[in-house]
Image (cartoon, rainbow, N blue to C red; front, side, top):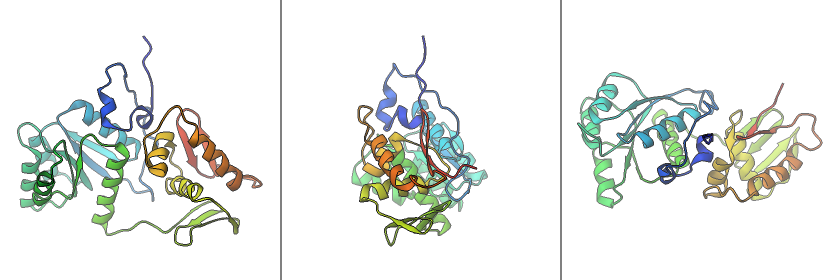
Length: 265
């Protein structure tokens, strides 16, 4: 029997879909080796649910992170106490030691690693308890992977004291987020709001392949519907404005995976 081979983001946008017993996921390896800006970071993911752990670990690897994993609270506490991580993702309900106890211990030891808490508990009191224990953010299961990745990157940015850039450049194409304009070879290109948002997302992830699911979640704000061709249609229109009439294209299709903004030599 032939197994389905899907990139992580096309395979599932939410953790709910991992429960499908008929779908076997195989990951195609890392799309990128570093985060935007060329910075490679190491993170820890701790969860006793093997499906969720595998889902997050493989997804973060595709985002360019170096990822270590732990399957219980004691293991998570041990590695966080002895190794340096830029951030950690911890489930609350783990054997041997729960996530909140792990956080309290490492904070008592002076470990300042930013912690993103995962939990099926969604009451306000639960969120408050997690943050009071020393967590830096709280994400309720089930969740969209794109939200987890965005929250994790935000924690890392805050811990470094950095902020998002207001302009991006790929070759002779540039966008200015404050002026809300795009230029190529110095000439202004008129874009509709959705086209500008799409170009911003592609350029923010320059040299990294982004899937249609990732685009739908980040540009349109909802999960990918395989029956629609809205992404292909918008990318085609954007290409007509960005690449038509220029010697070197910026937007490229990676067949079976997605799209990437880059200048090919």
